[in-house]
Image (cartoon, rainbow, N blue to C red):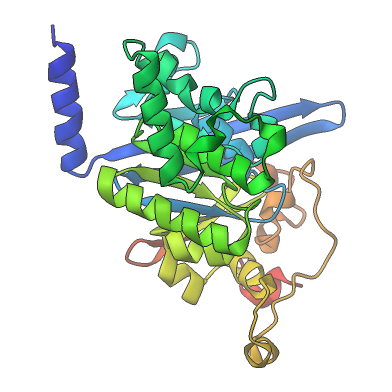
Length: 339
């Protein structure tokens, strides 16, 4: 029987060889309502290697946050596999999921909703230490907490303050500190900088980049801000109504998008330079905004396949590799998809 040390050495060797830290295979998370089924995440597949950042983008309601919570096992999944550090995290294996928390952390979108108003900032940040490093004494925990507070540009003198005494941006940095204090191998950032001022956003992004360089941490970075995604991500995954429509290197997708939805998403992003904005081509998707309850909504870019086809909901667009590492979901020509 292999010892814990043997398993840890094998995991380290696998990561050094380039094996994925996280692998998601055909992940599905549905919500059942009185009006029908919402396929919030509908068969998403991707992998993330050590030291990489995957940016997940898409409009509101496309399934970004649901994907984040399903990855860290905060939401149940209806199908698919989540493999973390070579271990398949089964929903029924609560002990394995609990142990994975040490290396799998999340920064939530709403800092106030994710912090206990009755706990001081220091107590909130130290909570992971109590769970996974119980042998630390009070002084050692406080030293670790103050050190991480300084790393996220929080005054250590705030250690005994409460969330309502801080600004939204400061509370978000508390959430970042709490997630990073254990130096996890993967951090899921669900709109982690959306509540911050632009100057603080730049600081936090630099902090995440520094931590990634120092500790080889991977990030699953969910954001609606394409400028932020461009700054921090190595690869980008574009979601539309729970399905992935494009994946590839960040600089390639943001410079040369191939899917009609990705083109429309990029065209809708505001451009600070008015001269560039005036000359920027407009991409419009004509028609009503589809309902997530519509079983054919996710196929709107394959109109030739769904017209008068009763089995259209069973069809899944195939992935096409248009360039090395750049994949696009099958779709009709852009002019046909926008018609």
